[in-house]
Amino acid sequence: MKKIIIVSLSCVLLFGFSLSVFAAIPTVPPENPKISSIDNIVELLTRIVNWFFLIVMGLAVLMLLFAGLKWITSAGNEESITTARKMLIWALVGIAIALLSKGLVSLIANLVVS
Image (cartoon, rainbow, N blue to C red; front, side):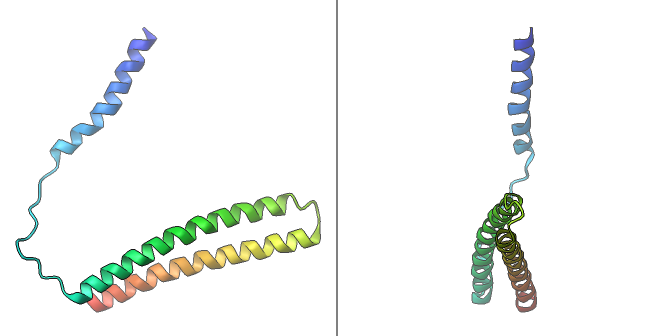
């Protein structure tokens, strides 16, 4: 009986969410889109910054985890604590730079495209 319930719930979960795809309204792209070169540059810059943001945020999270681990395992050693503190500061600086770059590109895109 448990197997039947588990299989039934699995089928409902797997196939139940796929039904919402059929409810989507198809859209037709415009015949002749007129995209300026500024839009292309802004789109390219946005894509580059998005990749930069993902890479920097991933590295910053790893750096934060490593610095926290180093701080915890320092056992009162002042050199290790200082090193871990510097790593934490630089990881936070990296996060701030990534956030600023994303915000700056959004600001420039809104000013230029509008």
